[in-house]
Image 1 (cartoon, helix red, strand yellow):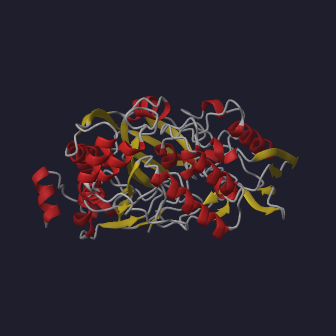
Image 2 (spheres, one colour):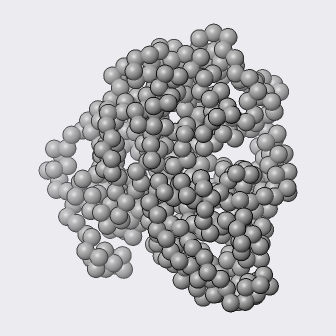
Image 3 (cartoon, one colour):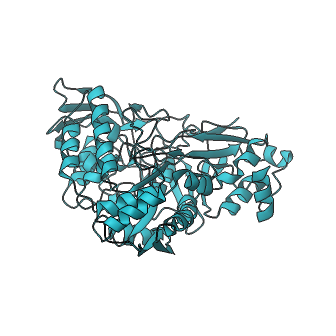
Length: 495
């Protein structure tokens, strides 16, 4: 009842689509709502998850593929063998594969894509995925042999990411605006600020895939507008609904299916460790004590979200619960600030990207930090400027963002990453992890890595982002969980 009152007061409850309208709907078409518009459509040249949410498996394919359960399954490689020492991977490619422009796919394209991703001029957001590659050989048009300089226990998983998408030499440089892949859908058009439209690839190797003729991705950032779009039928599905306060209303409406699943999104109050006063670990620890995670979860996500104490998903093997390391304790926060030379607190700027959790969470955190003397000026930013100034330029004090790449704790070991964090202790753990294949030992090392960055208070770790999905009853095969950022519609249909 509380949630309904909030919605009514805001004037955002709309009339649901009538049964007759739903029945008359085009069963060969689906409209999917997204919170953010991607900056471009080349998954090998950008960090924005919105790129993957449009293109993963739909437009582009990789050697392997990650399914909804997070398992590695065949992609453009139908099978593979791994040498006994874990250093050589022999991929056997599918035959008869074509790009959307009609050109043929073969092993030379794989070599080009992998060499491009790991090369000196690479702008790949996950260049580290390819760091262990020593050589890429093509014994024949349908065979690729990748030799690593060291074992990499994540190699097959990483080769299933969208960052490892196989792109052709002729179209690689124009994929940002005119993407050309091998997937079951083709790019049709992009209406800036509104939508991206994909259409069925009639030449896809499997005539039964996809089931849909057209997929429209609509960009709707405002939570009230998201709810209205769902209930009016303007969109058929919102796989990551920002308006989590509306879920109780939608759950009791048999017109819709509501699923709250898991994501890989560690949501953090990111701190610029290379800028004073955040270069002082006492200040960072003070901020962790000053933030009440549960209040942020309740206020920003209406209770949906799992508290975290380090940069690791709770559903992953190797997770360590470190939420008790910095309990909410304003008095302790003030004491640490005084020890660091800030008895009266300090002024700072928090730059917030568009996601609802960031904008709402920023308001709540600003109020909490004010209680210990940290005075924040809130600066909302659109996605492209945030990526350019904060993520790439590292020009910020604080920000809030969800990191959605799976098992991405290695970002804390990157010297050029926007956290500006350096730790020989953490680097040593990650070095051993990179050379370890045995699952139990890898899990233990992941635990060590979590402990180091939590003790160093690199960021204020807030919550694991939930996947709050809602779609019209009758749609099948939409993902409940997000082991990778994706709106995979390759098997979606109306029943």
